[in-house]
Structures are given as structure tokens and as C-alpha cells.
Length: 184
Image (cartoon, rainbow, N blue to C red; front, side, top):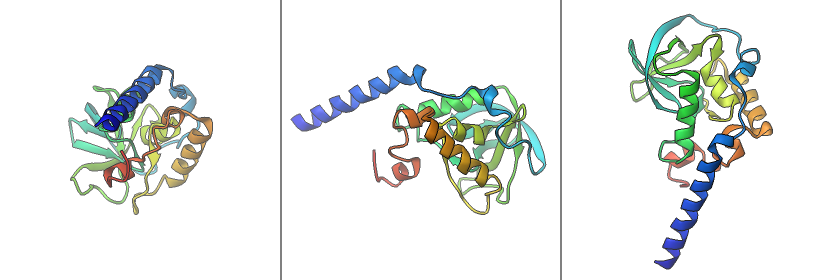
């Protein structure tokens, strides 16, 4: 019991330290990203209004329901504080009430019936920006891979630059490993 209490105390102290650092996590300004990401959609787009940010990689749009951002994965909300921080990063790029463009790839929906899309706002691809800013990891699910080269470079640069969650150990347990119960 004493070991469990000590372990919980250490985890809480660690989480508190990360939360205290949240305002000082290195990130890249959005303006710096516009000229370095994918220049424009490859396929046609449709417009939707963001109603809600579900988590770091899912939004809800008034016109289409839930939209899962393709090509990237963010920490689960239960991975405090990392999941919350990824959601806040998404909200900063595509705030509630904003009109965004949705670009589809080969598969239209995932197994949870969410629309799959690349999200664009003001010439910036949000999916790519989350990877480049260090809030998301590259996640490849063929056949939806039209931007995989962009995301691969973005993740490498984010990690090298130590920005976003790379700066605070937010990917020590990847979202996929967390879902599989491989780490806490």
C-alpha cells in the first residue's frame, strides 16, 4: 500500500510539473506554418462549421457530424495532460464557430462512422500543422496516404525542434500503445 501511495504521489507531482509547464511548452507560431505545409488541397473540398472539439484529432461539424482528422493521432483524453493539450491545440487552429474546408481521401468513413478528412482553414492544413507543431504523431492508415510524405517530414522536424509534446515527454506512451494497454 505504501508503494502505491508513493507511486501515485510521484505521478501527481509529475503531472503537476507538466501542467505548470503547459504555458511554456515550445511551439511554432501558426503564421510560420502557412508557407511550409501542403500548399493546397489535392482533391475537392466541402465546407463545414466547427461545432465542437471532441479531442485532439476529432471535431464535430454542423453539416456532417463527427470528423476524424486523417494521417495523424493525438494522445487520448485520459492521457492527462497531453490529450487535453492536443485538443486545445486543435481548438486554437480550428476554433468552434470557424468555417473549415474538408478534403476527403480514398476511404470516406472509419469504423466508428466518423467522416475522414483533412481539415483546411485559411490555407493551412490543420492535420499537418498539428504534427509539425508537435501535438500529434504521424498515423498511416492506407489507402488514406496522400499527404504521408508531408507528415513524415513534419514529425521529424517537430521532434528535432523539441516542440509541442516532444518537449515534455508527451509521446513516451504513444496513443496507439495506450489504446492497446501497453503503457499508462
